[in-house]
Image 1 (cartoon, helix red, strand yellow):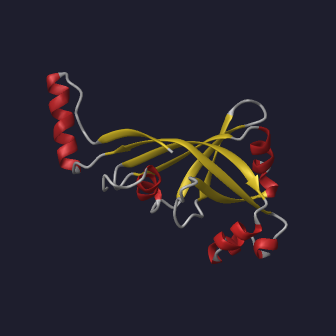
Image 2: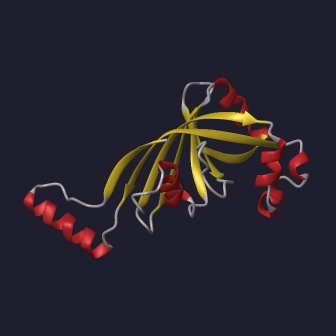
Image 3: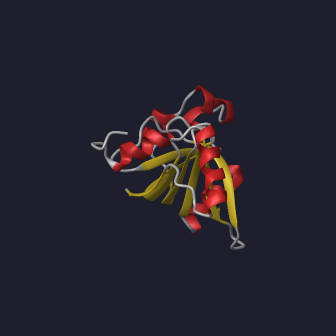
Length: 165
């Protein structure tokens, strides 16, 4: 990634090819619940908002209206990229956003299109992100872990950073 990229661009580069994010929220009983959701964005704009379509039947939107503090995590085990995003979720009635984001795959879940009575748009306003990215090949990783096990020192692999958005 270029050093000239904004935090939004760096974050988007890491998650853009990961189809599903796990959105974790607080349930009414106080426990944490996670849902796999498809990120609808084509980019992460300067406002730093992630978009998800959900079903009103799940009551997820109601839970987020009660407590919008969420975490969205992404992982790509093939590329060894892991991202954790802290944000504030809101239910959006923005019709133009629904029209812009709606696609043929979404129609499988919401056959009525943007007017489907079960369709709900969730906006997650990114507050903070943290990522781990391992650039070393698998054999190099194994070698470093073996060397660390012998030496008693932690292996030094990859990159771990926090991004303020």
